[in-house]
Structures are given as C-alpha cells and as structure tokens.
Length: 291
Picture 1 (tube, rainbow, N blue to C red):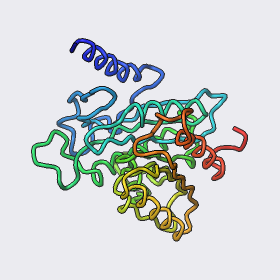
Picture 2 (picture 1 turned 90 degrees about the vertical axis):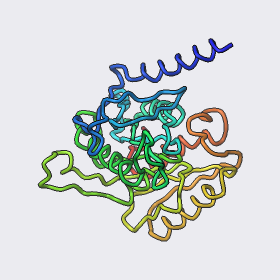
Picture 3 (picture 1 turned 135 degrees about the vertical axis):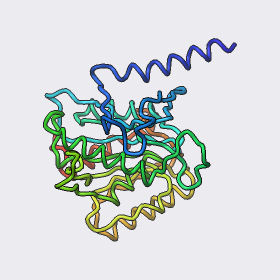
Picture 4 (picture 1 turned 90 degrees about the horizontal axis):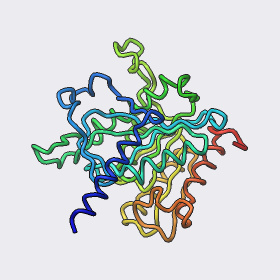
C-alpha cells in the first residue's frame, strides 16, 4: 500500500525538477551565495509533493512568453507556505505558466524561509521574512530590471505578486523601495528595487502592510471564507491604499477560502482573479490595450 504513495511523491518531485528545463532556466539571485548563506548555498532543497523547502541559495525560475505575444510586462511570483515551505505548484509554476501564456514574463521567486522572531534555535531554515526574505525580494526586482533587455521586459513595468506568506514578502518589498546605491561594488546593488505594481493575494500578516502616498498600484484579492485576520485585514489594507491615494483593485470572492491560487482558474468564480489581475495591468497601462 505504501508503494503507490511513494511513486506519486517521486513523480511530483520529478515534475518540479523537470520544470527547470532549458526553456525555464533557474537564475541564482547571488551567483556566489546570498549574504549570510554562502556556507549553505550548496545544500539540496527539500521537495515533498508540490512544496519546496530548505532554500539557502535563492533564485528565480524564468518563464518568458512567445516573442510575438510579449507585452513587455514582468511579474515576480512569490509563493506562500507559511514561511516553512513554498507552495511551488499552485502558487508558483501554474501561475507563471498562465502569465507567460498571456504575454507576461514571469519569474518564480524561491526565497529563504524561516519563522520570524519565534523561530526556535537550530531550525534548518533560520531566516526572517522581513530580513532575508525581503532582501531576496528586492534582489529579484533588481535582477529582472538588470536583464530587462535580454528578457524583453520594460524596466518600468516590473511588479510582484504574492500569495499568503509570499504576500508578506511583496508587502515588505513595497514598503522598502530601495533605489540602489550608485557606488555599490555589486552592479546589481546599483539598480532600483522599487516595484511598479504589486499583487497581494490573501496575504498573511496584512496588519504589517502600510502603504504610503508613492506606493505602487495594488491588486488585492481574497476569499470571504478565509480567516478573519486575512479577509478583514485585507479590507483594512485596501482602505489604507485608498487613504494614501494609491490606485487599487480589491476583489473578495464569496465562495472562497484560503489558498485558491491557480487551483480554481477556469473552474469557479474565484478562478477569475487572474483575468481581473490582467485587466488591472491594462488599466494601469503596464500592458497595451487589446493585447
């Protein structure tokens, strides 16, 4: 009875690895290891089913649209997973594929994981989302911007979309729009990490998200049946964006709970969020109308 389960687990793990074929290269955020993680950069990631953990060498997986369909818009996808793992298929691979199929360059972010200040000593992932996770998100923006010409991306149309814990990463990057240091030794550190737009999909710890007047336009979505701190919390975040004068789309799906990600695309009303997100990008002129 255990053999079929093992077979399917191995098949799922293999599928995640095969997604890194030539057509979807994996690009490290730091070629010589992320600051503070250099000694562990060669540790293998742990893949269980459709989730990934033990990430010490953060990276981007690249999904580029066909050239005749490319809009020039780019989205860095930040999967959730409670900072313990990444929901790499439902909130990563499937999202990136949908975006690329609709003319949007997509980059799945594997960021370093950990349990904020409550993380017990000795855990294999001793990182904090608002320190290393934020640094990984900022670096991802810089990396995409630095290779915009190569990847067919408009450097002024680069955003992030995050799910659950991944939304916390996006919120942190939004609140820390590091514009780069012209005299930095690392050329990438001279690039701006400021987002041009953002998507917060049922983000965790929404109370930490504090937009200001010059925050990038935002797309917000959650389920009515999600936890109260998420559904009501995101409503409060919307009001903060409104008060700050930041253009914002806000969608609440009555029949949805937490974690719908790509699972409901084409199947139910919550699955329509991807079309609404694309319409938001058209409305904010990051995608040409009619594309």
